[in-house]
Image (cartoon, rainbow, N blue to C red; front, side, top):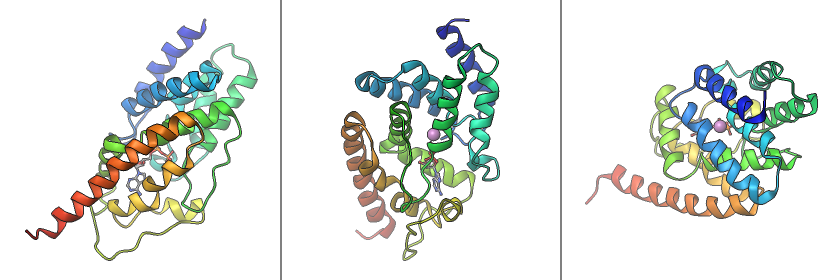
Length: 216
Ligand code: ADP
Ligand code: NI
């Protein structure tokens, strides 16, 4: 089977396997793939590894599997072993999936490979901007998190275990993660895109607080 056929088969597998909220569905995997290929070309990364890792990165997300953060890499590896791929490629993809998640405001990323940095940037770009706002409230709906609790301070988590306990409100999630992402992009291309999307979220928050007060 050639590379194109492996990608096609993987698309079908991801479409039928992902079971997150509407913010973690096939369309998220597809947007991350497109962003990752755009960034990866500029960074001269291995685009086959980038595309497969982007498609598979949330195939079994810990957030929907009782917090098990190894499950995604395991499901992806089991799938990729069906094809005659070098084990180096499979290991690289499993490594990316294991490292990709945001783990708390005070927890540094540990991604070592250029392919991983590209896919991590693409995933985090899809957490920003208008799509980022939509995805965050979709997640809040699924877990019944209040929109906003005035006076409730955000927590800057120093471990993944703490971060896994959900935010008190969806607005707090902006301060606990989303607004921190632009300064954590690895590549020049993603930094530029993140800056625009960040600005849009700041405007959204300004308007949100204005409407919340209902004072005219
Ligand atoms: P990561 O791999 O960094 O966890 P994902 O691509 O899986 O990133 O998506 C995470 C997205 O899910 C967030 O950007 C946000 O939109 C949503 N999300 C995750 N945790 C929360 C939360 N506690 N409150 C609201 N939204 C959340
Ligand atoms: Ni993702």
